[in-house]
Image 1 (cartoon, rainbow, N blue to C red):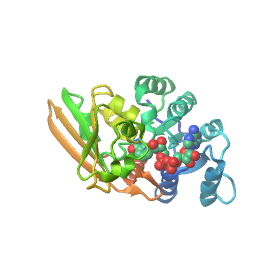
Image 2 (cartoon, rainbow, N blue to C red):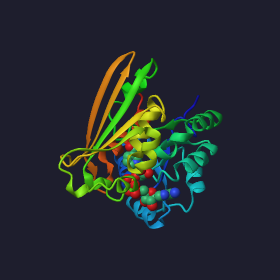
Image 3 (cartoon, protein in one colour):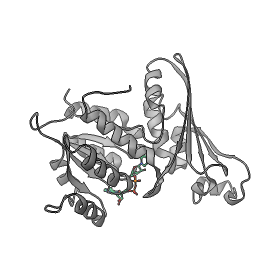
Image 4 (tube, rainbow, N blue to C red):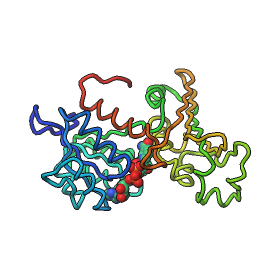
Length: 282
Ligand SMILES: NC(=O)c1ccc[n+]([C@@H]2O[C@H](COP(=O)([O-])OP(=O)(O)OC[C@H]3O[C@@H](n4cnc5c(N)ncnc54)[C@H](O)[C@@H]3O)[C@@H](O)[C@H]2O)c1
């Protein structure tokens, strides 16, 4: 099954980016710098037109790459990268796939409940869908182990208490986040519930669930820790193939402290897998 509809064998992969924030901007820079022989930026779309215009000015002096709507971006692209929001990612995915264009999804939380539909749409329109591992290491092993029997998967997230300010679920527990002297478990339950109560944890829980045993069976523990400055994610998996433990200590993205730097790098690594002939890892 072809993953892209290349216009001809020698042509560059035309890439459009939806969402011109921390991830969209970093990916655009990397595409222009690292992949210019095999890919080119053709369109940027953002609900805030100033953002897409600003990004366009960096990469094209003659012609604006900023478009006014998703439809125009889809028309120009072979591959669309969604880096906008979890509220919009499912709608964007449907439109891109209906336009028979390949898709990379960053706002994974928004599509976690639609995995089967995405797979059906991708098959129907004969295009690929790419979901980077994001801010988690070990997804390669989770994917492989899940081919055999998996007994349990637990994601434990440690974040500094300030990260949970304003989270309604925490406010209801009447925990004084400023006065924590030790680790405090804020939540332990299914990934489905975690995604509901902790939307800022949504992408890691969603990617892990999709790679492994699904959003109902994956367990998530969320800990406020006064001892950490980075966002830390640990995966524990017990399976027929053995035990897996991974720990990722994420440095935050300078343009958006809610986003981990590794999430951007992971998307660049997926682009490399797409564009280069040798594929490494599962
Ligand atoms: N998969 C992962 O591991 C991972 C990690 C971090 C962030 N993310 C997700 O990636 C997305 C982008 O993250 P970011 O740090 O770049 O955020 P950001 O806030 O810096 O940028 C998002 C941009 O998208 C635009 N936008 C919002 N809704 C839109 C829509 N419907 N159509 C077009 N543009 C829209 C905003 O105006 C903004 O410019 C977020 O949804 C975030 O949750 C995923």
